[in-house]
Image (cartoon, rainbow, N blue to C red):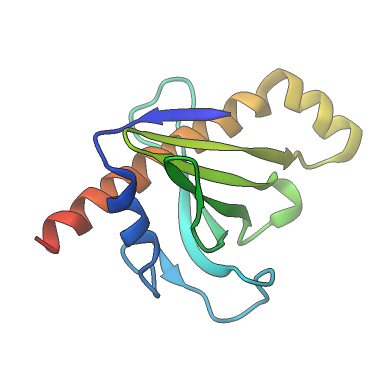
Length: 152
């Protein structure tokens, strides 16, 4: 699980997530099959390696479900996989939880490469996966802030 504190209200994020195109976050992707009840987007995910300031970018398909109320916020089903060379990159499936002042990403990812991939996961890939999740939450918060300012 990765948690990102934020200055955003859950309702502001929910309104942005209800945007039919989600063009503020990524490009809608019409080709290919998104899981039932989800929208598929094409975007670049970022990964900071070794504390670098500039992320390495990887084209990915991100699938998002509809926001559903949970407690004082809501959850969105989310998943992603690489858009190219998919067998070489992890696949993620989980939930994006949104509450006032917090974004949380939790779920499961399958490392590539079978047994060798699971060993590499213990050594390095877990760090890369957490880095990607932190980057995605920060990018999401930044995009929602920009959209909220545009709509004021």
